[in-house]
Structures are given as structure tokens and as C-alpha cells.
Amino acid sequence: MNLTSGDVQRILSDETFKEIICRVRQQQIDIFVNSHRAEDDAIKDAKYMLEAINRIEQALQSVVADEAIKEKRKKLK
Picture (cartoon, rainbow, N blue to C red):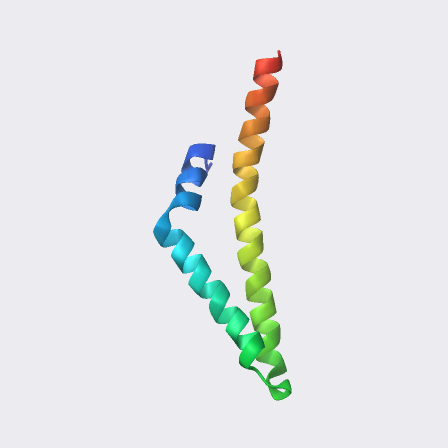
């Protein structure tokens, strides 16, 4: 599936999407805050989940940025 910049902008600005990302991120942060040393696996999993969330957001934002770069290049020609 090929996502367009418009598709991605709609996803990124969607209040439901933003709320879900915020909740999942906060759940993972809470694991860090409320975990004890004995829960190393839970802390590792939370770290990986936060990294995954960040990568998803970066991937979506790169679609928008790439499209903006393409548009600027077209205007310069």
C-alpha cells in the first residue's frame, strides 16, 4: 500500500490516533516509573515498545516530509 502525504496527515491529526498513541506511550512510561529491579523484562519490553511507537511516528512523518521535498523540487524546476 502506498500512503500519500494527505493520508498520513489525516492519520497524524486524527484525535483518536493521537489519544491511542498517547495512552500506549503513557502505559509504557508507567512501567518504568512503577517497576522494580526484579522486573527487568517488563522494563526492556516497555523500552522496545516506546522505540517502536517513535519509529512508527517517524515513518509517518517522513512520508509527509518526503512529499513536501518532492513538491519543492517540482517548483524549483
